[in-house]
Amino acid sequence: MAQPIEWPAGKPFTPPTEVISAGPNFRKPPMKDKPSQIAPHMEGLRTDEEFDSFMKQQKASDTTVVQFGSTWCTKCVEIFPAFYDMSKKFTKMNYAVAQVDYMKEATKNVKYSPSFFIYKGGRKVDEVVGKDLQKLEDHLWLHNDE
Image (cartoon, rainbow, N blue to C red; front, side):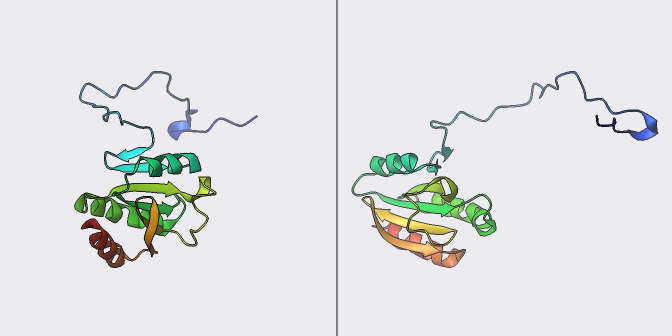
């Protein structure tokens, strides 16, 4: 049996028993339309089924950008805020972030994290590999006007 942790002044630590209220000024964030939604214009994809469903929702004329990465990938985490900002700048495209750890089929051609695949009508037309912000922005700019 573990010994109780001694707190300052020699008193044993006991966890609080009352529930702490957030207070009247606390506002809950708005509910998302879908559980995997990162933002109104960006989806989070964790399984091959979610990826397939997301790609089927895209129209033939739609350009879609998917970031393939993982939460343990330092470069993926570092580039995400810039990718998110670019997604607000280049608004003519659809965006998603896919977790490579949970996918098998959709990530067959992903060799490096982060990888950004650009799809047109469900077909891969371009990719940007790595954490090169200027290269990513150039490719998004190129495909945004199509």
